[in-house]
Every structure is written in structure tokens, then in C-alpha cells.
Length: 398
Image 1 (cartoon, rainbow, N blue to C red):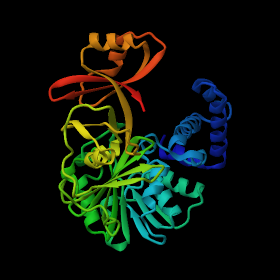
Image 2 (image 1 turned 45 degrees about the horizontal axis):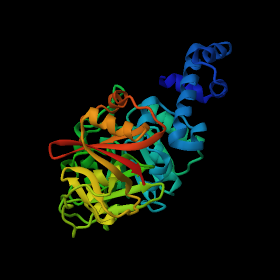
Image 3 (image 1 turned 90 degrees about the vertical axis):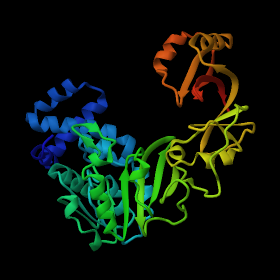
Image 4 (image 1 turned 45 degrees about the vertical axis):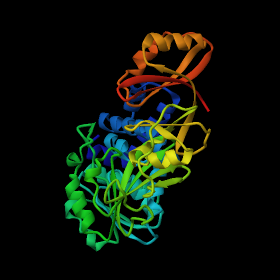
């Protein structure tokens, strides 16, 4: 979809074409049939644009809920856009009336949350099509105090605003990049903008290397319904100050669970978690706690220890309850071999198994096929290693 086709989509006939495309897809007709229907009334570019937009709106419901029905998207923009609940969580740190420079606004997912939180947002993006999409979204949702223009992030003057928000592009040619130096703009340029701002929030991939995080900042990893979605780096007045820097480095660490809003910060008094043998229960910490290196804090909550100092499986004798970990009751511990695991599961009448791994190179789908199970019972199998030895734990979810 190019800029001309998108602009046409915003006009009266474009809106009609989009409504028909949405209706066709909701009826469950195939793309070819839907295109044939639209071509009776609209030219090929408008038909293609309408069908693309209808498909993107359907996919966007998972991130934007009911808002997706009136919003506009590009494929890469939707892929990188922040889930609405996560964006709203971040926006709550900004006081109403805060003047925010959104230096890489994309299709406007965070812009929407900031505006709804009462911020005045001046947004830029280097891509003209993306800018038009962001403008259309602001208009469709009736946002006030928002301006969007074509521009380079490097041209933004962070000192002219109360705060900076930056979500550097992490996709190139449709592929996701995990190297901060390959962000657009590159990570050093983003940090340069943040350094010139009274306060900043920088959205980054969850796997950002610790050495890339600036001293004095607060790094927050966010998990939504058990899946780590992203990390945010907070600087200046937006860093809360209640997650002090500790043994992990000269920056603060926080993990947050959504939708509950539960938060976990580093306890400087805790040393590395103890290591010991498997106990009655195994605990799998939430990914945000693992990314934030807060496994010791989770272990302290459940009164447990690690099986291996390098792998985030916690074990303990007490059936503790915490939002920061899933608990499993250990039924059997096996030094791993396919033959041994298959025999143990068959002896228990297991026909359905949930496979999970950490620190294991096994291909879980291949293992599932190789187990060739039949039975009417189910269980969870956790695969890991202790030292150099692979193990399998047959468990029941508690």
C-alpha cells in the first residue's frame, strides 16, 4: 500500500470500499472472492488498499481491541505497535498536561495512549505513509492536543519539551532486528536525544543487552498475560526512584505484570539465590522477572532455590503462591533419555503432555512426535539441565 492509495482510502469512496472489504471478510469469503466483489465498483489500487486495511484491522483487534475497527495500519507498523494495555500502563507515568515529543511515532499506538492520558504530543516519523496513518488514527479516535509531521528523530529538540518518547524502528525489510545498533535511529542516537531531555521513555526490545542501558536509568520489563512484550528505559523525572541500582549495574530494574499492574523491583539485600536439589515443587518465573534479573527476588517469595545457578527454574518444598511464577508439583525426576521418558509417561497412562524447556536444546515438537503417547491422562514435562546433565521432570500443574 502506497501513500496515494492510502489517501484515497480516507475519502468517501475509500471509506465505502473499506466498509465493503470488512463486511466481506467478516462473512468469511476468501480474498479472491472479496477482491472480485470490490472490483465491480472500485479500481484495482483502491480494492487492494481496502482489502489490505480490512485484514490488518482484523489482526489489530488483539492489540487495540474495539479501537481497531476505526484505526488504520501498515503491516510493519502493526507488528511494532505497542499493545494498548501496555501503552496505557506506560502513559500513566506522564502527568496530564505534559508536553511530549514522540520522536518515532509509527502508526501512533503510544501517541494514542499519551493523548488519552492528557499529554500534549508533538510526533514525528520519517515515513510519509506512516505519518498519514498516525494522523488518520488520531482523527478517527477524536484525539486532541496531537500533531504529527514528517521529520527525522535527530531533528527533534528534546529540550523544548517536558519529556521525550522514542520507539526506534526494530524492523528492516520485514525482519525484526535484535541489535540496538541496527535500530532506526541507532541506539546511540536515541540515547543522545534522551540525554538532552528532562525526562524520557525509550521503548526497546526485551532482549536489549544490559551493557546498552544507560547509568542512572530505570529499565522496566513488561509481561502481558504471561508473555514478555517489551522493555522501557526511563530517564530523568520519569524514573520513579523506587527501584534503586544494585549489584547488576548502575541502573534500576523493574518487572511489571499486566493487566494486574503487579510490580517487582530489585532487593539490594539479596545475594544470588542458593542452589540445591530438586524439591517437591518447581517454579517457572515470569519472563519479565527473568529478563529483569529478579529471579532471586522470586526465589525469596517462594522460599526456594535454583536447580542450576544459570537456569531460572526454582524449586522448593512449600506450595507457595506468587503472581511471579507458575508452580508445578514434581511427580518424577528422570535423567533424560527419550526411551526412559516415553516409558515413564506410558506407565502413567499419559496421552497428552505439555512440554516446556529451559537450558535445553531439544526440539519440543519433534520430541512430542517421538514420544508417541496414548492414554487418557495429561501432565507437564519440564526439560532442563543441571550442570552438564539433561533432566526431565514429570509434573502436575498445581
